[in-house]
Image (cartoon, rainbow, N blue to C red):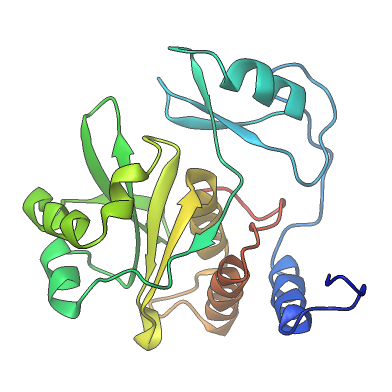
Length: 218
């Protein structure tokens, strides 16, 4: 909203994309905090259980309590989504990363002490071999990659159908997108329903919106 209480330009369109994405989500179900059992609302945070590399739904009190401890079992996952409009990734650099499809996400795995490349598919999130020298060259062109929170934040790349989009996202958003693809994909090409859902996901992320609760997990 602006200072006069009206909508800023583009907000109506952004809300339309979010509404479209919600149509692909599962009907809302009662959710409980996985740490204390309290009921959760539709915008609850997540904790990353580091040893299992598993996301846990939690209430805000548990996110604050368990996510702020040093050398703890859990790490709080950010709720901020950012479209990187100035990110530089040439076609040659992308080819050097050797990702087999046009969507991928990259995060720093603190246990493995390296960057992991993943791509979504009908079977879930798959790991791809990553040429670390190619990644290092990408970091040299985009120093923001050095500021990603290990384990909990990722670079998400969309290059399908001519897109050249790059996002800094919480790791839960990568798996939410993977869940959409896994749930909707049909046959070899995916089908119209799957591609509509994928486009709606990226439109929501570009608008700075998180993918809604109820989207199937990976």
